[in-house]
Image 1 (cartoon, rainbow, N blue to C red):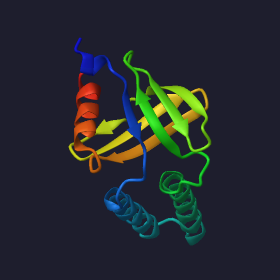
Image 2 (image 1 turned 60 degrees about the vertical axis):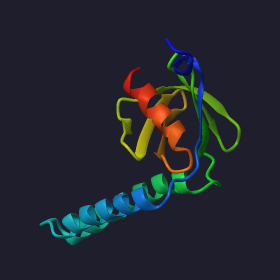
Image 3 (image 1 turned 180 degrees about the vertical axis):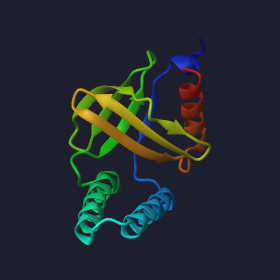
Image 4 (image 1 turned 30 degrees about the vertical axis):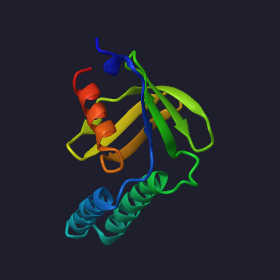
Length: 142
């Protein structure tokens, strides 16, 4: 194993550019439109739209706001393949990357399982492309 693969990989998690959130917003708008065009009663349509909007808002707020106590600020991929997550308040958890994580060429959606529940982050390769490439390679071959 090379020294690069066995060294810790530290990700400073900042909210990404609004590009992925625009796509998520468009996807949510399509879901809301499909709810409103369905044959459900207006009360059910309103309740489904409110529930979807509330859940989506809470999830996006946890990523876009540095004031949310659940916001992750650092994720360290350790040499053994485990993760150490740190939130805004300095709390740390050891975590395992979930099967729902996706890494593309410019964005990554990472989801971890911890003893405190599920945590997630949406990353872009913008600020440090070399670090993002290292992450993609480590996740692809681990």
